[in-house]
Length: 321
Image (cartoon, rainbow, N blue to C red; front, side, top):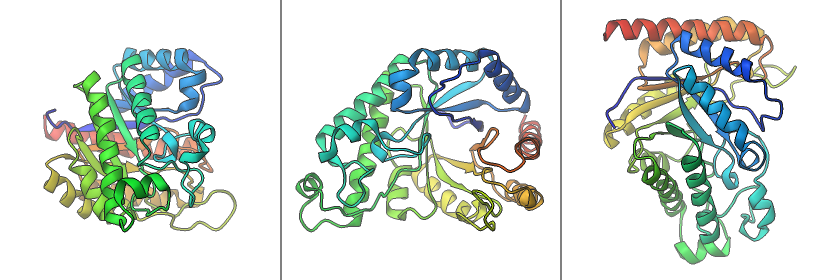
């Protein structure tokens, strides 16, 4: 795929239990008017079971608004992030696949899990007219487990680098399976900045990965009324690493702005740091949350973030027109 400059709105929900189609039209229309190229939509086991018709309608609504749709396969055996923040239905029914050290995480070396997860991805890509995939925050990439299937596959004395390679290969299998069905898919992957660099380099170099990078905040955050703290490295701290890994792999760069969990007292700091980041970095695929969750003043935070990103993107488009 020829590398493009992309701006994506992260718009993740859980279950779509209440369906109000005209609200989709309004939101997707606003995204388009703000300059977004695509919307990223979560798809978990819950959607696969209870919201298949709804997701099809949601994809169609986004396409009517001239947005591409990037699906976020979510919480697949606990090995990736996305919504919801809860355990895997499949893993609950297959307790022998759980890691003994992390009961919410599947053993990546289990043939049964690898087959089920691959078939899940194939089902999403074949059943829906999606334009891309975002692999969201792979979990515990370098964990050395005592699970017997991991030991059987990797050897009794395997180490963190072996675990990284095995999990990266699984993501490569998912990517290859999806591309066999839709070769034109845009595929992005991002990791948490604290993830083992061995794994993140491997991810960027996987065949079929178009964009790779990291997520990160730009100010202090808080979940409720506690004192705001720094939850993750800020985005500009990960930018040199992103550039290096993507240059080595020959893929485009990705960044997800974590504009959620914002107390109102941090708005000015966030805005200043967002402008600072966009002035010094230029991710090929930039994403931010659309009405990010758990902000103290959600309307104000949305206007603040979307305004800055829209101005940046429009100016960039004009410069390169």
